[in-house]
Length: 131
Image (tube, rainbow, N blue to C red; front, side, top):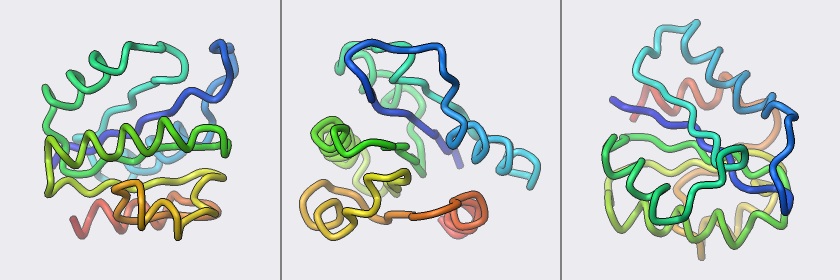
């Protein structure tokens, strides 16, 4: 099953700072036998929203992990999660990062299925294995 880990825009302009949390999860999944996993660096690449949706549409993921490390990413996270759910109602949408502390709002209003707080490597691996 295809798994995609995606970042969200966190500043007005992209920086050269690597998304350490997302990359740690990607590495952990691969080290633990999850081979069909991709990283989509929306924060760094800044695609138009339509292009981001085309990326997901082309890959038909079973699980999407959205890394939302700042609360200002809420609107983008909500829009992305809802659009992914419209395209693929059975795709599991998981949000991690600091925004996941607002789990109640994300779960009720943003089309998110699961929020992961804290270190997410083991938890996300279990989610992918059970999906």
